[in-house]
Amino acid sequence: MSPERFARINALLDTRQPDLTLCLEGVHKNHNLSAVVRTADAVGVHEMHAVWFDRKGRVAGGTAMGSQNWVRVHHHQEPTSTNTLRDLQAQGMQVLVTHLSDTAIDFREVDYTRPTCIVMGQEKHGVSAESIAAADHQIVIPMVGMAQSLNVSVAAAVVLYEAQRQRELAGMYAAPRLSAAERHRVLFEGGHP
Amino acid sequence: MSPERFARINALLDTRQPDLTLCLEGVHKNHNLSAVVRTADAVGVHEMHAVWFDRKGRVAGGTAMGSQNWVRVHHHQEPTSTNTLRDLQAQGMQVLVTHLSDTAIDFREVDYTRPTCIVMGQEKHGVSAESIAAADHQIVIPMVGMAQSLNVSVAAAVVLYEAQRQRELAGMYAAPRLSAAERHRVLFEGGHP
Ligand SMILES: C[S@@+](CC[C@H](N)C(=O)[O-])C[C@H]1O[C@@H](n2cnc3c(N)ncnc32)[C@H](O)[C@@H]1O
Ligand SMILES: C[S@@+](CC[C@H](N)C(=O)[O-])C[C@H]1O[C@@H](n2cnc3c(N)ncnc32)[C@H](O)[C@@H]1O
Picture 1 (cartoon, helix red, strand yellow):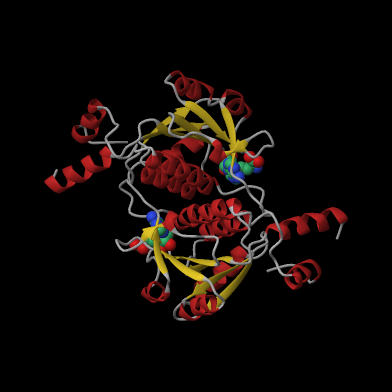
Picture 2 (cartoon, helix red, strand yellow):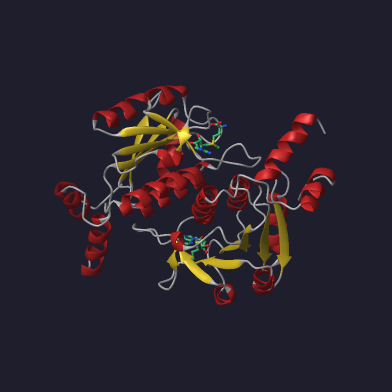
């Protein structure tokens, strides 16, 4: 590795947010997947999750997401996201499902400086009932027009940039937050995914 | 038209923001175009612009954008966006180009309660030099990762939801802002586009 590249990767790792993640539920269109990973990278997400309720989606997603980014995507093939979300909660994360319901709170009311996982639903069917039940909060992005929902990669970006805004104000990009072990792993074991 | 539909359209028109618009320069992928129009609708954009530097793009865009939305898209086939942007400035709008440059200011520093046009660049080539020259400001969305840019529909959404945030705080969604003539036109001449 050239010294310039080594410095570039170190600079990237200095801004990574190990306690901000996404969980995508069956989001299967390649342009949506790659847009979400690209935005996640841009706000410093280090690891994220994709739950595939069927194998077909899993393969397509794996192909689309791997190489061009510096975000580690953990793929889970399970009938629901419940195990994945419970694991994150056990690590101290609040789980927020994005959901267009009357009981959801405005996405800007949440404190994103807390360890946070944001769950995004499938293009057609939205988030699963199991994930809504497992979540700490449902959040919604306000809309005033005729369209009933936003594109999933757009919705992910709007929420992630609210998290970025709050974390920037709180100084969370100003000092490295990744563990030494994880930094070492990415630098010397070829990075990820 | 049923009374319910009439009420629904009136409610939509009550939140329309006639002085918030977009200008897309040669944005030609259908999934990007439709995601941008869907987000524009969701924040109350009433009219927007698409400049096509070649005919091919124009036709694809026209097909993709028309029907499912309540945002009027004006198509311009011109060698640059300069005329379109000058017209908007003559109507009192500030023109902001989204551009990944060192001289751009953070997108959150702008006052979006002013009449505003946001210029989005083509997927591959970004905004044109002519539009950068014509604009009042260049704005950039901060990024900390390896990816060099965001997807164009994602970038449009992040800026539009900052405009929505500021306009909501300023009470600009609380009372109708569309002219009576334009409301009448949409209600009784079949809407748009
Ligand atoms: C196209 S939407 C799914 C629409 C689905 N028919 C429904 O009602 O849930 C895909 C995903 O984008 C996210 N999303 C879209 N618009 C949203 C909004 N206004 N607020 C919060 N999340 C949204 C959610 O994660 C949703 O599951
Ligand atoms: C994929 S980008 C174009 C990349 C092009 N290579 C360039 O350097 O301009 C497409 C459009 O998305 C918008 N965009 C993407 N990322 C942005 C960012 N971080 N800040 C502002 N605008 C952005 C701009 O309108 C840009 O022209």
